[in-house]
Length: 289
Image 1 (spheres, rainbow, N blue to C red):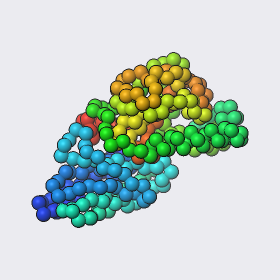
Image 2 (cartoon, helix red, strand yellow):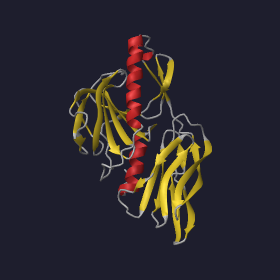
Image 3 (cartoon, helix red, strand yellow):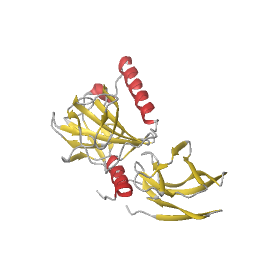
Image 4 (tube, one colour):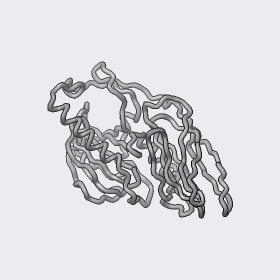
C-alpha cells in the first residue's frame, strides 16, 4: 500500500513548524504514524480518535521530533474519519483536525478444526476464567509506560515459514469466530522463541485460548505477545533484551498443532505485528525490513 504524505503548517510567535503525516491511508488492523516537529512555544498533548486518546512521545532517534501511533481497529470499515491533535501554542489551547483514510485490508478467510470445547465453551468455570484473563490482558494493554525500552530495530521472534497471516477471518468448526489476531510461524514443540525487542515481561501464564503466553512491554504503549508456548524461560517483571530466548514453542491453548502465534498491541488496539515492526523500523531506525 503506498504511503501518502501531507504537510500542515502552523505559525507561532517564533516562526512556523510542520506536522508531517505518514501512512495517512491505512488499512483496518494496521497502524499509522504522525511525526511532529519540536518547536519552542508548542507543547503537544494528545491525539483524540473518537473515544480513544493516544499519548505523544519523543522520537527515539531524532531529538527534533515527536511521534504518535494511530492504530486502526480490525473491525473499522473503509471510511474517512477525523482525529484531533490537541496542543498548546504559546500556552494557549489549540487543536488541529486531521483526516485518516481507512481502507479495506482485504483479508482472506480460513477454516480451522479444533476440539469443540475450545470453540464455544459453556462451562461457567471456563467462562469465568476467560473473562478474567481477558480483563487482565486489557488492563495491561491499556497502560502506556512512559519509558521507551527500545534502542534498535525490531526483529521477528522466529524466521520459519509463516503459516497464517494476521487478519484472516477464522471459521472454527464451521462457525465464524472473529479473525486471526496475529501471525503464526511454523515451529515444532521446543523451538526457541526470542524477544522481538528490549522490554519488560508483564505477563507469563497459561491461558485458556492462548495457552502458555508471554507479553512484553516495550514502552510507550507498544506490546508484543508470544502464545502457545511449551515452556517459559522468563518471569513477570524480568527485563529482557532483543534476541533473548524467552520460551519454547508448543501446542498449548486453542490450536491445531505446535506453532508460535506472534501478535502486537498499540494503545490497547490489536494490530498487524509485522506491519507495525516495519513501520517502527522505517521511521525510527532507518530500516525497511
